[in-house]
Length: 98
Image 1 (cartoon, one colour):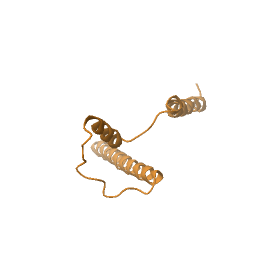
Image 2 (image 1 turned 120 degrees about the vertical axis):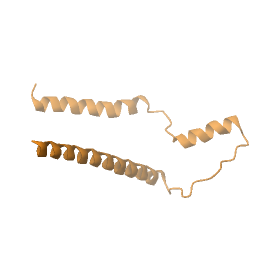
Image 3 (image 1 turned 60 degrees about the vertical axis):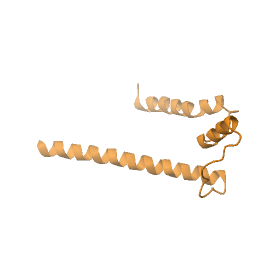
Image 4 (image 1 turned 90 degrees about the vertical axis):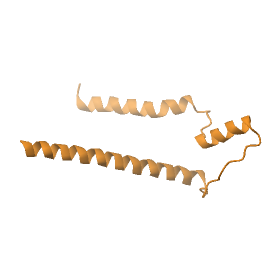
């Protein structure tokens, strides 16, 4: 199989993997775990008072999503930098031994 055909097939699978779950769960309500936890506790104990509130509430859902994506990007960037640095260090040690 030619590399171009293989790459196109892989791209189609990635697109399907990204969009099929969204299509299947199109009527689902996506909420954060903190919201779900508060709702679950409130159903068990109506007199529950949270210990503390957020220090800052983002002005909109888009800002909240942006901050979450930024946090994910920084975390993955640091993780993959460390993996690349370690791999390069290992390769350099192997080259020096030879």
